[in-house]
Image (cartoon, rainbow, N blue to C red; front, side):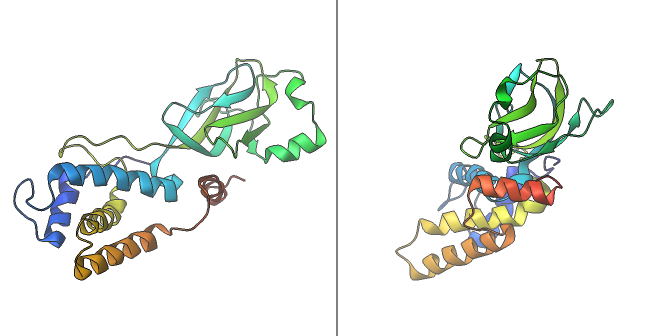
Length: 223
């Protein structure tokens, strides 16, 4: 997905309107706090909606079966095909690893090939995936994965999620802001209200991160 065009300050202006704390830098809620909550909100959205912070890359494969996402990777969403988009090769497909384990328990030792037929994502460690047949170390695959959102440090930094998540981030930051005033029943209720708006917007569920990744893969046309 494309990175957003709005800045942290664009989000904070809306937040401060709702909080009634419009002084530069804030009086009750300082900019530094809002930055922390904005980063937290971006991560929470990504946890609940893995497709919100996604990227499509062409990656060189290591020799053998076990592979890893880039260092900023959280979970693979879909695998597109062998090779690069400019010269795409054979389509490959994500399947459950147990499906291959049950019919070919020795598949890790099979003859190596540069072209991938199946990709399997780890449930225990979503940053790890396997390929079949074992790769020669010369193959490439193009895939889409969820990445950790870039950290915001300055008010002028762009939000690392699409602009459509601005209102969602505003609700998340307001929820965290009102949590500081839980001795007030009004603030407590406002925190609850903003959290409910946030969860409704992102479709929060009790599913695990791996299950959400699987759901995102299914929505994107994977398995």
